Image 1 (cartoon, rainbow, N blue to C red):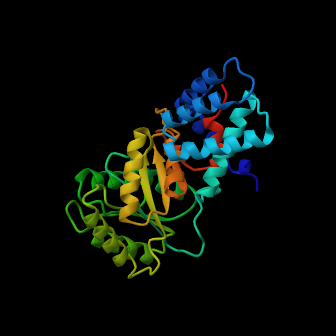
Image 2: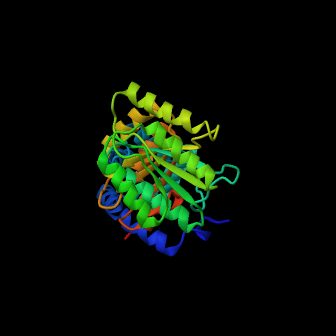
Image 3: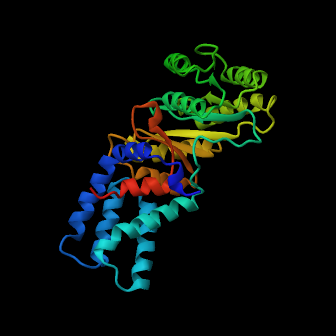
Length: 318
């Protein structure tokens, strides 16, 4: 099955639009760097290095990309400036593949895990609850039954917001209100999902980077109570990051990966920012696959990440 079989024209347009600022930023800088030059030389590579770093790809990842391009230039002896963007696309797509970012067709779930349990972490303000709401909507569209758990009990708004999303997308939300024990919310959520034979459980958890030890303890406790019903739960720990914060997203990723085992990333708010390169850097630095990206306000603007399409939109010529 080719990548275009499931990547509809509408989704592609949303992705192009969402990454427009990042793409314009990259291309205007790249255009200035190669103006009047016909072949890729050291000077252009130095400029490219600076462009990638200022596009929030991150220093280490940028060095890696530049080294790969240098190797290609050395091997092919002559690479024209016109070929540079094709080369960039290939190397970045290859890099994402190495970080276990494989293109999944749509909002699919493993058939042998029912209910499939997703635990969601991320600091307040990154769009965590909204991502959960949109995920629930997408799973429901795919014909799955969903249960949500409001276990981010530290912030009143997080609980209320999730309840609103539940009403909006018509899925049950298990909540004990604010300042209650997150683990008992998670317990009741998983119990409800097992009782109603649901396909997927999404539990909203820790919305703050309190001290690492507290965070670890809280998440460990949540995992432990869920395992009373489903021994291998959670099947996925999804970290939500705000792409528009650039380097701040790196810092948050570092903190959360120290506190728990993150297995997938959702990077939100990529529309309206020129920092789309952060997706490449974070995935490379932490060796965690990017699973979802947020490219707009609409419910369907939370997309399953497709590396080829992402790179294509990021380096799209106007």
